[in-house]
Length: 97
Image 1 (cartoon, rainbow, N blue to C red):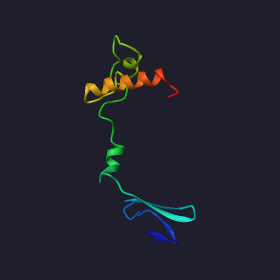
Image 2: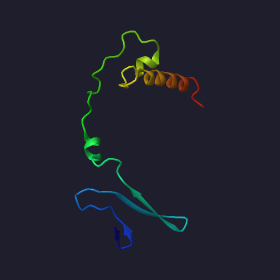
Image 3: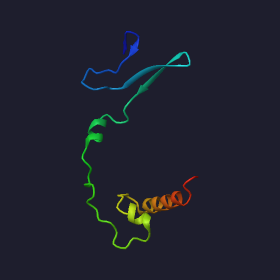
Image 4: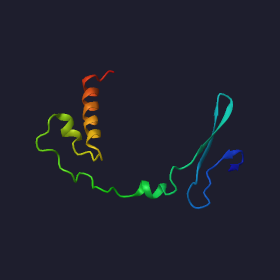
């Protein structure tokens, strides 16, 4: 909504339906519209986690430091966890890259 030349969020229901902003960039105005991806975005973001933090145990005999650090990450597919271990080890091996 335009209010005195400024764009402001629509707050008719107590919260923004979409975000509006306006800024000057190089002498011209830019208008940004933000829309939620889900209608129930507030419930999704404010929901309690399904698994309590720190409720999973670490592996008894981890193969290496990556498994010890990331072994409790709850992925639905074991291949993703292995990929995380590989990425972490590769980043650690070449920190300047």
